[in-house]
Amino acid sequence: MNFFRQIDEKILRMQRYYEGAGIRMSFNNFVVLFAVLAVFAAIGSFYIVKLIPSTSADNSLTLSLVTFVATVSLAAAIPYSMRSERVEKIDENLPEALKHMAIVLKAGGTVENAMDEAARMDYGPLSGSLERALQQLRKGKVFEDALRDAA
Image (cartoon, rainbow, N blue to C red):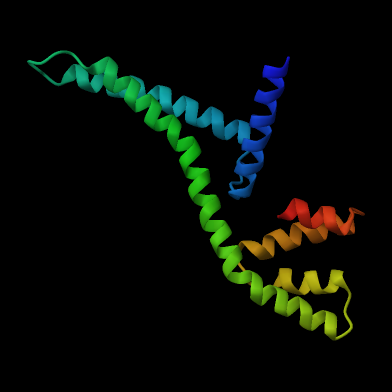
């Protein structure tokens, strides 16, 4: 049972990481898509190698396996790359967004108003995260939990 619990924890961690990439497709659909693409790429590479006349040993199965692994590895590499780029943009825009929110708060606005103002500005992916946190706040979620989920 401990083994399955560890697998579940790793899958949940991968899902959270995937959600951080900002991909709009569900995690399960993304995994299935890349599994299907990997199978088709492996089959395609197998038959392409079979069509090429060669005097050396037949490496079509090896190339097919390498193609499958390479395609499956893209399922991890693409979200990682997108997440890194997204985090970079958020880090770049965070000081300006916080200054904007501080100005609204100094002017007598509420935290909700400050988040709303910052979410309406163009701070890249940070604006979207602030908007989602604001929606959760309006639904009654605790401020800290809403920000933690947005992070």
